[in-house]
Amino acid sequence: MKLNRTFYIVTIFSIAMGFLETAVVIYLRKLYYPHGFSFPLAPVHQDISITELYREAATIIMLITTGMLAGRNKAERFGYFLYSFAVWDVFYYVFLKIFINWPESLMTWDILFLLPLPWVGPVLTPVILAATMALFAVTIVHYTNKQVPVSMKRVERILLWSGAIIAIISFMQDYVAHKGITLWKNITTPSRSLFMELVDYVPVWFDWPLFLFAEGLILAAYVIYVRRLRKTSNQPL
Image (cartoon, rainbow, N blue to C red):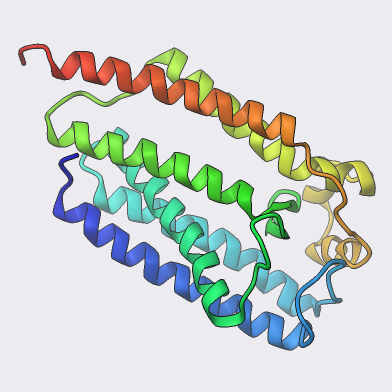
């Protein structure tokens, strides 16, 4: 596939951002998990918990901004956002493995995100999604460089976003089932309440069928999308 200089610059930035994320987590684990990270989560001071929530929000803003700066049109901006997110996420785990030999395996449980509810799942799941995101992104950049219109059609968007939403639900499902927490309650209660509830939470079940169904929808969107782009690219411009 033909890629451009911007693609490689975004790659370098995203890897560096992944290392920065790893550094922060290593510091937190040294403070709160000196004998190794495990569930349930250790009690966290309110200042740290609030800072951590804002840090996660800031991370997403940085990734979105990367896409906005790198892309030349709406579709390409979205593609670069997906790509930077994917590279950042994968290298976060790569650097954790290098520096503290964690996770023990791809099936190790991790807390993936905290907003709007805690996302938990085996490490393998975000890696699968990251690979899929990178696939979409590389395709978008490649066909943009070939001067092929890369905007997604309605059915492709529906499949993509349906899969993404269902995947997110699969990450939050165990927490909701075991804690009886609702989205509305989490939005309207202080962050300290969320971290206090996490203190006695131990994930026990991940809904693999639901997650794989979500991944299937996303891949279906990709197959339909790339077939259309290939057909378009073979037509005279």
